[in-house]
Image 1 (cartoon, rainbow, N blue to C red):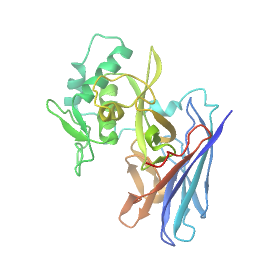
Image 2 (image 1 turned 90 degrees about the vertical axis):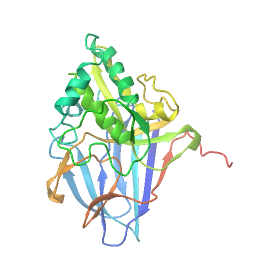
Image 3 (image 1 turned 180 degrees about the vertical axis):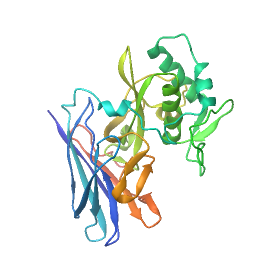
Image 4 (image 1 turned 180 degrees about the horizontal axis):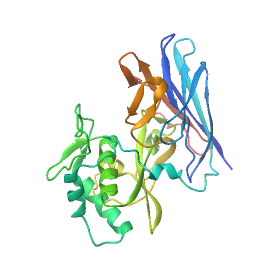
Length: 282
């Protein structure tokens, strides 16, 4: 058994608060807990999935967290990951249902999931647009022909909605991926999709295929070499005590501001694992 941890540091003014995912056990790794150098102000239970999150304060102007894991893993992903809450982030439009129905309609679910993954890749270029393709909409729309710029969040929002529109069980996982070329460091959180079919549970990372210049998508945790660990799951999250009835996702810790939760600028994220070394200086 190997124990490892991920540390997350960011600037957090005195008196400010952060919403922190409570960690997620997956078939690959077991989450042992989350520790904060600053005070833990509240422990919350997400309304629809039962996951735990924490509200924490800073320590001398900084947020300092440590997520601890071991590689024993769990028996399965939580069942709740495959039971989406109805929200504007998970609901598929009628046009998307029709679009998905045209993709390998007679194939068995596992083969059809891969066909939908490839069709999703054919509709996206990887990027971080100012406006997302589903902004302001009550359901995830069809994309039709042409290419849409999108991040891993956008790509997986469409992908998982298309899978579910086709009747394929699917879940949305969030956490961190440390690219092999960066060794023990990454710049932000990441997300990926899991499916459950006659082929078993499979993980999908379309964004990483696109980063590698291919739209020929295959299941696998790390198509782009590196190391990953999960922190939370699902979209359309509810935290009543924070007056957050429909948070899109909790991908990484969020700064709780008067204007709503937002990502931290320039977080310092590091993996502490005996098999992953700090990259050599260029």
